[in-house]
Image 1: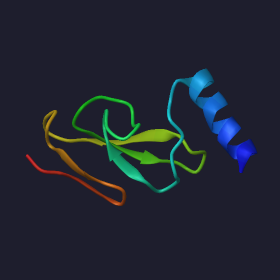
Image 2: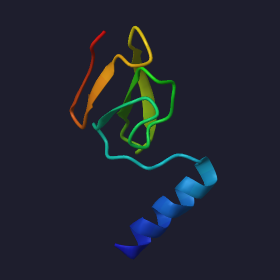
Image 3: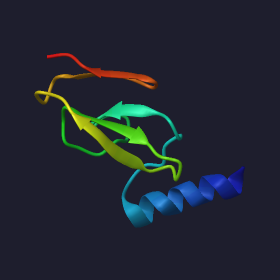
Length: 72
């Protein structure tokens, strides 16, 4: 447990990104996902945020976890 926690802290320090759980979705600049605002990101199998799609505006991305969608 402590080893995994230590690895996550090191990854955050080295890569400047927050580790995530594979299959998790987030809106850009929320919940540890990078920007831009209004983008949808998915956490890949390596535990890194990957750009999925861009909504029509910076406030159009809504939701979290497994339910993220564009509403403009």
